[in-house]
Length: 211
Image (cartoon, rainbow, N blue to C red; front, side):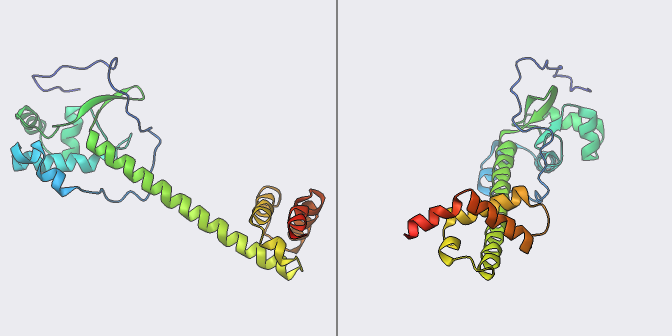
């Protein structure tokens, strides 16, 4: 690492552990939510030069594509190359009272010391939560559509509507097909499903309730 004159290498021991894993990928992470009021009232915006602010914003964006996401390499030469500026200019910017690395801290990233930023991390965790919510919503919609198709198919086979209206029964049937019938769902698969439901006593649940 090429260090600025006032800095020295930091040992990994005692550094905070970065919480996001290296293998985290968010394919739909195309933008970063930007809290403009938070930025406009930050020390970096209020006291840093516009050149420093521009470089800092570039680093925020670059960190989104690093590994782990949200971090930067602890290497001045590499940072200068990523920013496409001369190393000497980068070191000058780092010497400023408020530098482009304002707010960044060194963290242990699965054995590698890298720069991390609390706000960048916060926004990434929020983005990860939104992505997980979307994924779960998509999965729930897919299951619902599959169950509706199952209801239609079993109704066409003469299955009583009261059975098809029992959410516990229909979800158990769908789960059985997912585990035991890897082919395209067809009449044979539905016949075997009904045989399992009858022999397992699953249908008795509805019949008892109906009685």
